[in-house]
Length: 161
Image 1 (cartoon, rainbow, N blue to C red):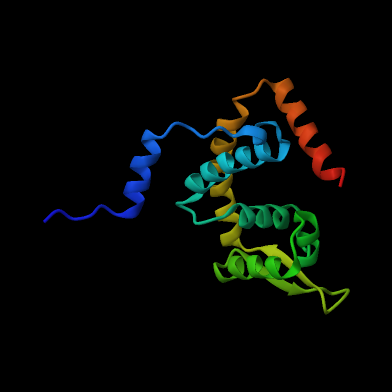
Image 2: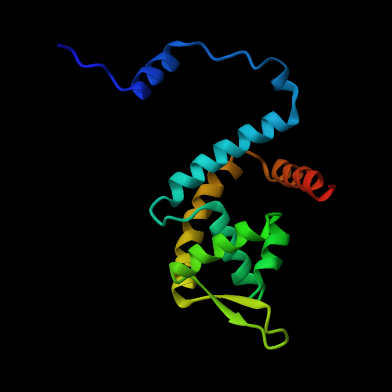
């Protein structure tokens, strides 16, 4: 008796035979193309960082703490446009891996200042090497003038709101 192939194998086989969908009106929507670009970059990032077990958000937090020792979770949440609960969970995960430590502020005991640990600094050094390779795969798609224009356009979108 033949065994039935798993569902994801069936879907993969069907996807390989099916012509691409007509995206219709989506093809003219800025948000659609931003989302598709984000997905491509996100997938490459996830594959690149798999060996270190870091997400984009975790790396962003570590970079911000490295550049702003003593910043608080609220400072980070505001900068990254995320809510406080999400930021607390991110910091908790990084603290559990001994990458970030909290210290009470001398000026305001209610405020927790964040700093990278030695292990966090070492991990960030390793991550930056991988990120440089990841970034290069996308930056190399553009001339330096195109890259400058792209970054300026993207900043106009998120800083304009």
